[in-house]
Length: 498
Image (cartoon, rainbow, N blue to C red):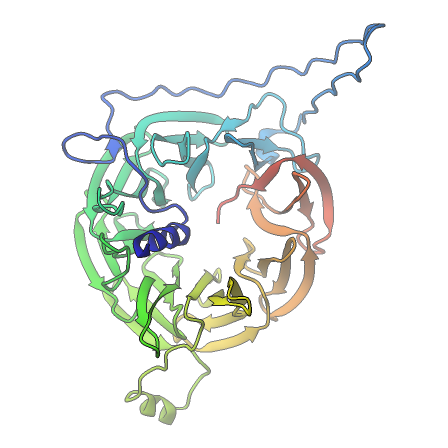
């Protein structure tokens, strides 16, 4: 029973990043199938011209089929919209002035599930698509957005992709995924990282880890690859060892430097209660790269602490997050431990974004608590932690903002924060970054900062309803008023680079 419970929680925490049953692989037990040949580049077929509905006959009683509407806007002015059916999702290129698909550009099948990443210039979308929900049969697609070409490679992944990242010049793609599961408990025997040549669509290098990579990124010069991950016990799924930071050579994925981070709790653990019973607790910290990928900031979930991993100096240090202190307070603190957070026993989750200049961390989160009500029935409660603004260099808390948001985003120019949450419907609070003041509350709108295919920024929003319909909209970036609004049948969401 314990093993089943942990596995369920682990799947939810990793967002399907951990292993699912995997198809048979060659003797080297790699989860990437390396083909002898490459798939040719094939552009997506164009959308056939819209046909007018046939004129009704005298016997016809039903209304004529409505004509499908398309936009003649240029491709470069469009934005990306995902639309989902029960069986698969489709990627559409949409005119943000009308909400209509562009004429001549068919939607792209994105499978039952997919993992994706945008190239730094926003011109290439890499996606590993899966035909079902087992994690088997994943295929790497490289979508050239300026020409709307879906290049289906012959690289296959028989496991969920946990994270993927492009090199700064967009020529390479790193993908992390779980290995073959153990027969006894279903936990993976190990984890893998693959490097792919984007132009040649070939596997450059592959390596294995005893930890699960959760954050992967190339350094600014592209010469090295930085990885952060956690170690799971293959029998229980618990985190029994500290997380690890690793610096790899980008060419062959050999390890150049690695470091355990004993002060960081990341994952699921057991703890003894005062009555002697054993319970489970999960801590999911926020991990954010510096703009040059030479540093990784980890905001602890279990306490107000900040760990910074400096991959250039190859050191890590941990500081307490709090108000600025006098020199005497800092001296006295050297001999004192940091008090553990008195949060709910089920733990906490934090998320963060970094300011455009790399100086401030904006952190939101929530505590998670299960309890029994007066009837003895199990209940689940989430309590927001508010917004915390932290100086990334020192850990000094600059400000706090009361909010129930559990997600945070930042505008492309770094001037606005988007604090998002869910109640009966989606909502977003927009904050001015410089003044840290609320600008507007957008009820019923999940705001997504995005880019047109020509690289120009645009502010989008969406909201799904119980009527199997999604309302999508385009907002004015300054007034935050809706410019265009359309209903879309089924579930839809904007697809944009983070």
